[in-house]
Length: 229
Image (tube, rainbow, N blue to C red; front, side, top):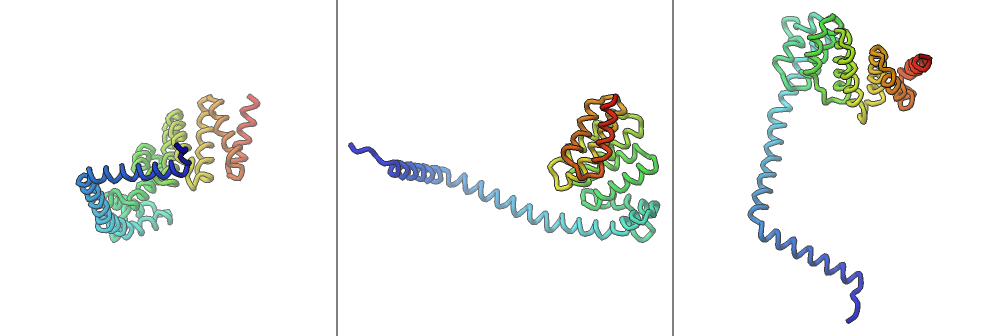
C-alpha cells in the first residue's frame, strides 16, 4: 500500500474534526440555542442598563458637581464642601450620586481637604471611597492614605499603603508620573523606620526606571546618604 502524503493526512484530519463538530452541534443543538439566547439577553440587558441607567446617572452627577469642583479649584473650601445654597457641595454630591465618577472625585477632593486640615482619620475614610480602580486617582488616593497614617504616627502602616500605591501605579499609562512619587514616599518611610534595605530598593527603582522624574535627584541623594551609613 502506498504511503499517504502529509497533505492527504491533514485533509483527513480536518474532515474528521469537522464531522465531530457537526455531530456535537446536532446532539446539543437545544442546549447551545438556550446558552446563546441567554448570552444575547445578558448583552441586551447590559446595554439597556448602561444607556438607560448608568449614563443618565453620570450626566446628572456631572451637572450637579461642577460648581463644587470649581469652588475646590478656587480654594473656596467651605463652599466646596457644603455648597452655596444653590448648588450642592462635595458632600451633597457624594450623598446624592453614590457610585458615579463625580462622587468618586468628590470623595477624593474631600480627602484632600480633610488631610490639609489635619483631619487625617476623616481623610482616610474619604480616600478609601474614591475610585481606587482609576489609574491616576487610585494610586494617588492610596498614597494619600499612606501620608495620613504617617501623620497619625503609624509609619509602618503608611509604608504599607505606599507599597500598595507603587503596585497600583505599575503598568499604567500614568506610571512614569505616579510610580516614582510613591517609591519616594515608601523609601522615606522605610528610612524613618530604619529599614534601610527596603528604603534603598525604592530609591534604586527610581534611579533605574524613572531617570526623567522629578524624584530622580532626591533618590540619588538618599542613596548616597544610605551608602554612607
